[in-house]
Image (cartoon, rainbow, N blue to C red; front, side, top):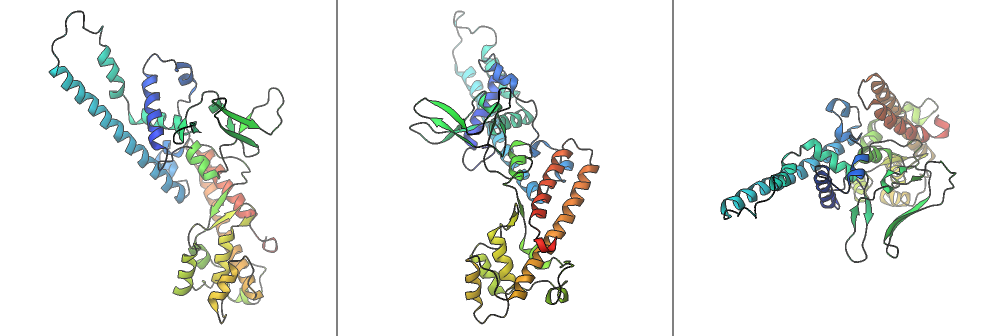
Length: 365
């Protein structure tokens, strides 16, 4: 589930501290620890220069993840301070030990030294070793949590598999059942969930090709102020090609009350339902009962005025054209970059461009 601080961060923190402890000691988990990656490609591990090549929405989410890491590393430092304080108090209050009671070597010091030596970089590695690999686990009696499952976490993600996964209370094991056929020697894939490329990059450090769950955000400002550059439109649209849409306070409040101001997105091959409703409401004019017209659009219908419906699609085409140009420029910047993760940036922008181009109306291509 990766960094989901609102629900599982306490569990991830505990497992991260466990990994750090086991890495510093002779451990039954040494072979598992040895197979873990030494580094991760998630944007939280990138430098600031590379991170600025990401879309602003992802930059903001990266900052949130960095803040989560800082919060829990501070928790670790508090634990370290507590351990040092407890050690000092214990040493000053204890009576001298007899010769037979003395511990061998510096065992107590070694037991605490691992915590003192943990750096923020170490902690980030441990956190993402857990968050990128853990599975949901729900015991028969108790709350849902996360767990590490060796071998299982070696399976890679694919958007083209049909699997069912979960903890089997009868067999007391985590099971994955695939509906896909595999030949001997084939790589077996699982699904990490129906996630878009933004999520996969932030949480797992990769971008999936041809992801059917990709989305691309469109803002209300885009719909209002993008100049119409459609070359196929005639009549009304041509005459108003550079006119910003006007929005009254009443219309804005209605859109806001119905959740149609934020979270507008393009999906693969189609604008989202909310985006189309918002766009049509913006283009609706002149009705005697405006609210009734807007309410009807919530049912998924088109505008009854053909000119206004054409205006909506032309406006959408203009928005898509502007974003396609912007994304192509971002891809070029990434190609010119010498950053370690430039290929991931390019893959992300290309995934976004694919979504945008797939939504262009057929008569506006």
